[in-house]
Length: 98
Image (tube, rainbow, N blue to C red; front, side):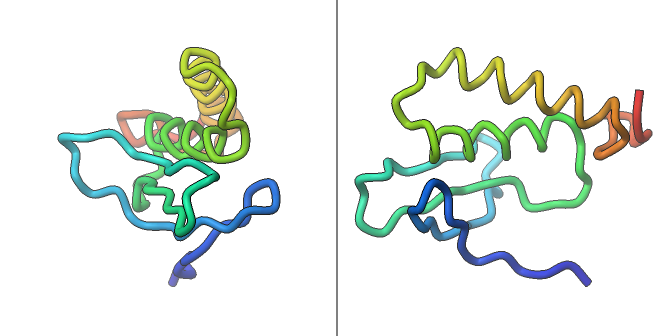
């Protein structure tokens, strides 16, 4: 059984971790200046490259709020692709690694 993660501390600030379940929207991260911050991330499994990319994207927003959206997206996609190649997550067909 996987542990239920309820909060995350990112760069010294605590976010409430909520599952992202509405596929019509994107995962979100509230501004670090918000009093009761929340980060909505994909609820696993399956742990695919796309879902890992979403998770990394929102973590980067939480920790690096002032970074441009395009830079966050590119870095998250690059990190997720590397994680898939290392066998840390599945590709879209459900296979691990490259």
